[in-house]
Image (cartoon, rainbow, N blue to C red; front, side, top):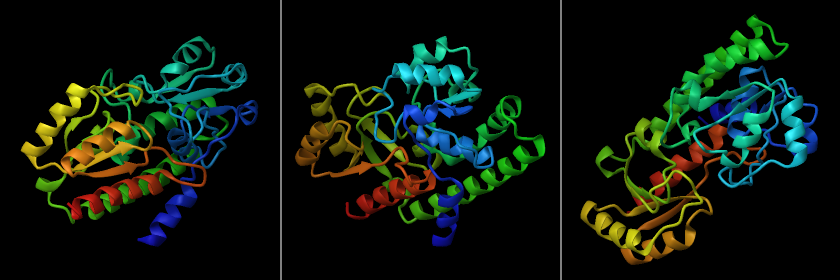
Amino acid sequence: MRNLFFFLALLLAGISCSSQDNAASPLLATTPAWAEVVSSVACQADVPSLISAQADPHADAPSLADRSSLDQAEIIFSNGLGLEAGWSAALAATPTPVFEAATALNLTQGDPHFWLDPNLVRTLLPSIEAALLAHSDLTADELWRCRQETDQQLVALDAELAQRISVIPVSQRLLVTDHQFLTHLADRYDITVIDTLVDDDSSLAEASTARLTQLISVMESTNTFVIAVAEDAHLEEAHRLAEVTGAHLVEVPVAPLPHQSLADILTELIDLLVAAWQND
């Protein structure tokens, strides 16, 4: 399977760059994950990410140079559902067509982190292909071939993730998260998210003392002893909760860093959860 993920990492290489690099790019994406997916469907065309891999998309906002890049692009691929809240006004104002993944999925509320489910990403590929056909120089035959290849890669990734998590019985796949960011991954791989530190899908929301007290009771009554945190979000509150309950605190990746692929971070995410459950 290592060869499989090396292959995926090569074909689904994450792309992120500065505003200066974005200036001459006909294809743009708001986040590294969508830049990678769109690039793969576009036969490895250059698709810069407007939001850097190190930035929190919930908190990021465009610069004046970014706004100029938006207007010069042929099409912009965004996540939607409030993930890039700081970019919403600029995306609404640009004359450039904007493809929104949430709209294509007919989602109007809930967890916006749907790139964490490879099967959900697969359902978007035909829509991405159609958008690229209308707004790029790629031919229908090229796009069809590259979309099929991307689909096969995601099928293989989905199967590999399912195999990796299968060592944990479904009844034991229980966890608490800092905010609502693992809903789609959990649905796909039979994970039960018992509760969250904040009742929100943004990493910017704050946890209250009353919420932490409630979570201690919920975790004890359900025998939930794994807390998953989206990297740096809510670390202080999560540490306090882990200390009181004796739970394992896991910081999990949610977006590819430079030279990482979506396959890399999803594999790491599942492996971290499996290790925490095994040590429970």
